[in-house]
Image (cartoon, one colour):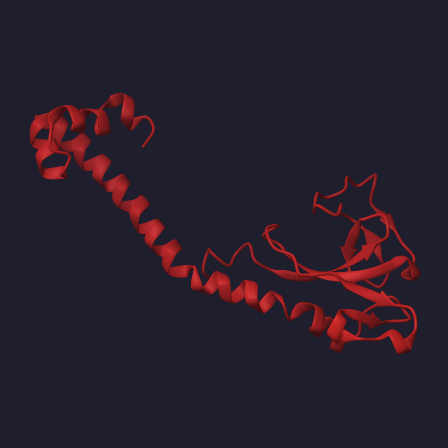
Length: 173
């Protein structure tokens, strides 16, 4: 699997009136995290009753994305997926309702796929930077001057090359 996707797994969270949320796929609702996705300590995690669920949202395990909130409609006549209201008397989502809540995640997934070239280019640039630093260290140990390194690296001067690749600068490489 691509490392860019390793931290992207979707799940549906139950939302409770106090702002806590937990996984909706469990048989018994439970609050496991705060509204800002900060995990609760084991001592603060607690089971909830299904009627305490006030809504749902899709969350990504990356922590940087969440879908919009879907509210729980108490009455069947208030069921309106177009306005993000789902009638779910048990407080547990069925398969079709779960699919609705998860649909937004596809946009996040597509965005991550679109970013693959950026990630690959970044990884290439980091690798090239490391190879460049290693090459400078090697040629310096073989006696190359800072002026020669500045010329071939495009930095132009010995001073610029030493600033860029010297011992104090290489500590940051």
